[in-house]
Length: 88
Image (cartoon, rainbow, N blue to C red):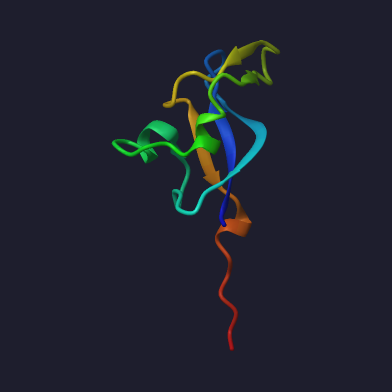
């Protein structure tokens, strides 16, 4: 099952910060996408819904903020999510 790193688009500084959390999805984006973009019109799996309400930390300002906006939460495929085919 592919793993996805979770990042947040910071409300304070505008940069992307890692949340140090991974989610595993049967089917997920093949590139970095926000929850709002990827799950547009589809139901969001419970493991992704659990991200809402967690706190994120701005690495520049040191301030914390809640993850409430699906446009700010980003799923990023990990390198292990995209295995390199082996020659036979």
